[in-house]
Length: 181
Image 1 (tube, rainbow, N blue to C red):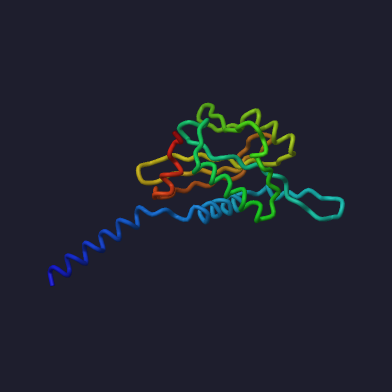
Image 2: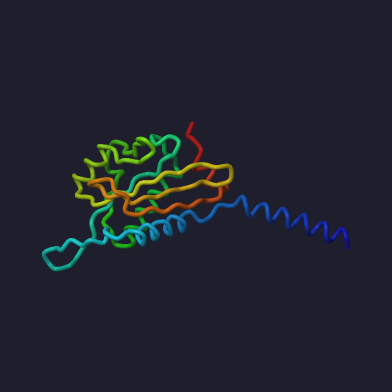
């Protein structure tokens, strides 16, 4: 009986450990973050009338999320989160401006602990009449990645909404965070 109990505990412990090393569903987590961003904002829903009386939402730019320790650096993880948030916004019928159509990189610059939009991002926002920009950072911990997503008004860098969350560092997340050699 003791051996059966010991065997059971060993199997249970191994199975339990493998649970902690698994990834969360990144897509559903990104979609939830997007929904929380939209729920938390008020004036993004300002509507612009068109000639036919139908209302459309203002265009939004979505950037790659960057490493909080080096805002000039992203990763597969940061690019995928940006892609998924943009996809969710499009599913919610927002006008999304595709940033990959640009030839240069756009990052967030850090100044005295606050995130400000770069001059190029401001110019792109003006060119496309974008009302807001989704920016984000991630920080890598020992067992989790901590993510902050912000919806920022393009004309004055006012944060309209933000959402913080963390993901366990499973094998897929670890691989997406690795630097390319």
